[in-house]
Amino acid sequence: MTDSRAGDSRATDDRAYDTVLADAMAALVMPRRGLRRWLHGNKSFCLRHGGRRYYAELLDLYDQCLAVLDRPARPPDERERSSISPVVRER
Image (cartoon, rainbow, N blue to C red; front, side, top):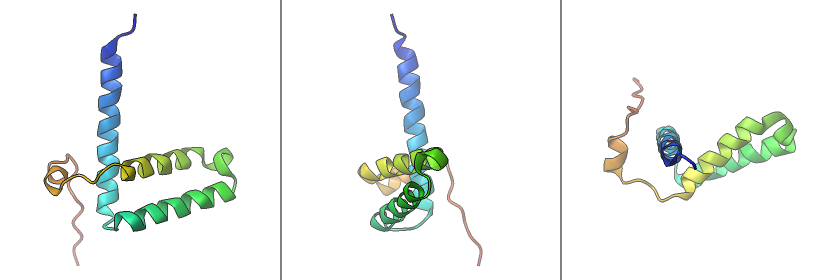
C-alpha cells in the first residue's frame, strides 16, 4: 500500500518549484516568445557541445523552464501574491 500523502507532498513541491521558476522568468522582463527562443538557443548550444554528458542538469532546468512557459500565463494579481518579491534596481 502506498501513502498518498507522499504523492500529494511531491505535487505541492513541484507546484512551488514551478512558481519559483515562473517568478524568476518573469523577473527577466522578456516577452514569453523571446524567452522561449533564448531558452531553446541555450539548450541547442548545450546539445551541440557535449549534450547530457556535460550539461545534464542545465538541460533539465531548460526543459523545466520551457514546460512552465507551455502553461498559460498567470494573471497579474496571482503573480503579485507570490512569495518572492521582485528585485528593484536603482538607477
